[in-house]
Amino acid sequence: MSVPFPAPGTTILVVDDERVTRRVAYRILSEEGYRVFEAASAEEAMSVLDMAHRYTHLVMLDVVMPVMDGVELGREILAKWPSLRLLYMSAHPAEVLLAHGLTDLRVRFLAKPFTHDELLAKVQESLERRHAPRPVDDAEGVVDHG
Image 1: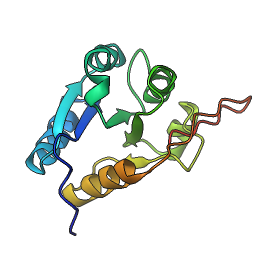
Image 2: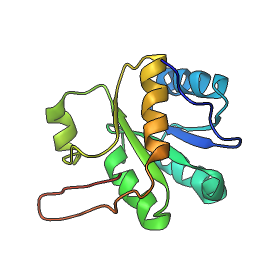
Image 3: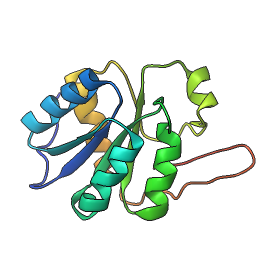
């Protein structure tokens, strides 16, 4: 699979409480020319974005994390920085994702474990999206994070 080389300075924040997943994503993305930040928690991710949101193009979020899950974190990120693009990832089945509020199938999603090519394709797809829809919070908890 051929994925276009990223534009110079394209930056991605990988948020996952599992160190192995963060390191694998970091290695693949950095070898392909992306600048990559890592965060092990929602709190750490918000700290990184407080300092680097102007330089961050995509945030990859693990759906299931302790304290604050990725869907809730995604809402907070978009409330503060609406132009950021999000890519959710998880190894959990659909039922668990639904319980965490990931109910909109239009969101960008990457299943774990992922291959080199799967990661790069989803990242490219997420970065190419011109206008990320705003989150929709209704009584059913539908969220669309583009």
